[in-house]
Length: 537
Image 1 (tube, rainbow, N blue to C red):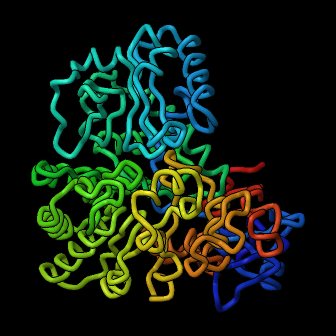
Image 2: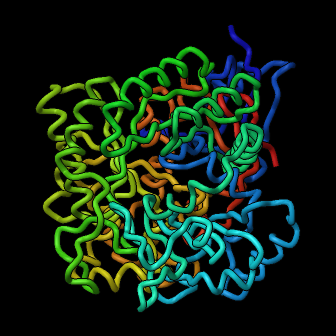
């Protein structure tokens, strides 16, 4: 009889509907050996005991859409996250610049776009904080950048500079640039001049990211947009024993360039299969169907309420998106499509339908990420096409971004279509949850609190925003575990059951026994990947 190497004792939510609770879990060889009385029976003198001490053990969290490398790098840059006013933001930037006179550029990410009217940030404001060198800062949505006058001058951007394809240069009334750059192609006019992060800086950023993820109970991450070179950063960390999570890297495909990227992506996938050590894979291709609603770049079926001449800025034409999806699917890649607006979501669904029609049926598990605005006619198509709906549940609340920037652009009818978690779940769609960190907090417990309440931390609105779109606690926990395991083709993970890898997280209290809003305040006390502790508080 195999003796347990590790025994957890206390309250356990297994995530397995056949046996939803247990009071003991035995682990050996990285897998669940037994539950309950059977678990206690296989404990021996050398078995390590973890007394859950009034807390609870649940299946470990898995982030279905996150950017660890970006997030870890931003942790060492200008501290923009959490600034509550423009003055505080500028003060933080100025202090960072003063502390780092050696930096040629001041960079950072995560400022709140609601701190300025309509999300427009002016270069002259940033000049007050950084007058002596260029600055390039990203909003928390990463679809908008704020630059100072020195950066605009360095890039040669003036009133005569045309807007790039699929991007927009913010302008004053006289046509001169105002310091706000919308979408990747506009950002690139300046970003191409920012010094590249060295291999050492990237490695250090990934180390910080790994520590941040395991601290919040995460054992697997879908890296949601990377280059083949960035994949190599993950592979190096795995080879050096510095990667505390498992990662699937989605390689970002670009309109126009994607035919040439096919060979690169196949080679990158092969490198990961050879050198990933069971921790890193590269089986997924990421495509951006559109931008974001806050900036008016998400693709809509009907014009924006506040701009009747615009339906947004699709990144791909629907035809090219479908053509590329068919090609990458034929290469054996899983599809992961950022789609925010209802036209972006429909284009992504149409692309999956084309893939099935051309390449035939197979278990491909395509993902539509964010799934923010879904036309009611498209809700049944997710389950019918086998599409996984990835949500960042923390966004499904009436916070300032939603109230000040998003809802005014949509009007009351479309405002009822946002983040249809409940509607898709009732139709049999598989839900996966993620954070999109560093766009928003990486903490799964904070996302779960919003998913089950549709309320802000202050409890607004009292009965929940669009209450029919809430999900229950069990469903929310599953979306962060079994749902993301399904997304990852990790069919033996996401539940605490005999034979499953022992991916578990210890929370300091049972969320079912707390007021739903207080779920966000719970703390992770320990995280285990295949029975190995990656974090202990």
